[in-house]
Image (cartoon, rainbow, N blue to C red; front, side, top):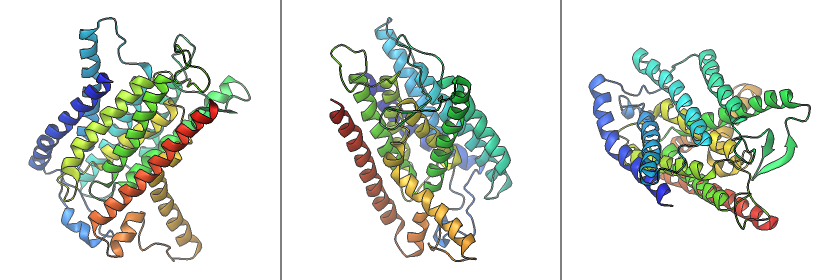
Length: 367
């Protein structure tokens, strides 16, 4: 437990102290946010606010994770270092963050609202996603557990196995399935990141859920002394919990500067990195479908865009909402930005509570 606390505190300090330094650097270089003309007019006052703040979150998480493991090793030389699952989650988070960084940099340097073109973005994200998926099916531990499984999971692996027609078919289908989760998660966080502090605060709650589930999976891990019945076949649950704690700490530190009125935005650098981390936790903790509930706010906001676009095309130009994503609909209805953010945080908390309730109830039912 002390290890988890160390990772979270280090990450919090790095982000809290590092963000204002990064703001000064961005301001000195003139790296400010470009605001769309077709968005809410209230957002025009945010033009020029430093962006790419997600770099601070990513760097804080990586630094705190490695520093915590180094300190633990110095205190106890026989302890395990960073796990395979930990490295894989960092690969997905950092890889998606780099794609977002390229997107942000092009927007800033070209002074436009569009960064990478759609094809380039899809290729880069797919490359990171495929590499993650392939590696996740390898590296078994001493019990033969690999970081990921070809079985589709809810609270744990289900009987639905993508390898129903053999290993090769299973690997191919898992790569597709994994990339679908990654794409959905990154888009969900990206669409949510439209108001000051909204995405960062929501992600704190969701990653807190994975912190708690990681601790529980570690305590109820199959093969552990005295554990019987509804145990969990997750390769490195404690290390995943440490990363979840580090993400919570980094986001809280960043939120200090990102809350309204924001001094810095996370940009696509942050939203894609956090979306990648969400997908990584879902896949590596064997809770893929549970992500739909825990991250219900992101799902709701993504659905608002899908419904808006679909209805617009089918109806010949009519709209369901005044504007999508959903948070901008309420802005145009006259809600204050802070009111929307707090109420959406409440919704996120309810979704997270429901997901944790299902997670625990399944364990109780399996005893």
